[in-house]
Image 1 (cartoon, one colour):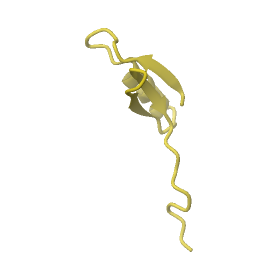
Image 2 (cartoon, rainbow, N blue to C red):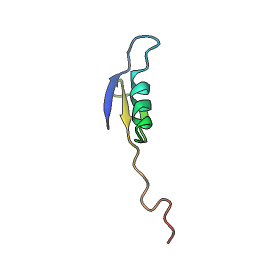
Image 3 (spheres, one colour):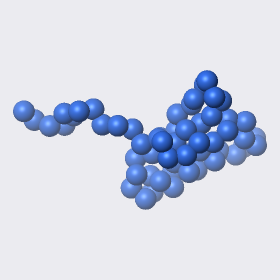
Image 4 (cartoon, helix red, strand yellow):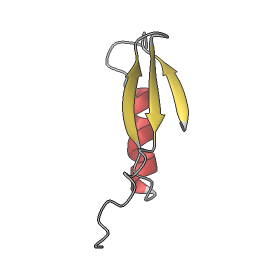
Length: 56
């Protein structure tokens, strides 16, 4: 996880999406996910599946 943002941000404001976009612009494959239990948006770097894209 790179950063947490409260889900109740100001209307029209998307701080989690803006933060994730800035990370992607830097080359980090950041995504925004929702933590429903804590009412937060999380900016994460997804894990690659083991062996994905590797020929045996």
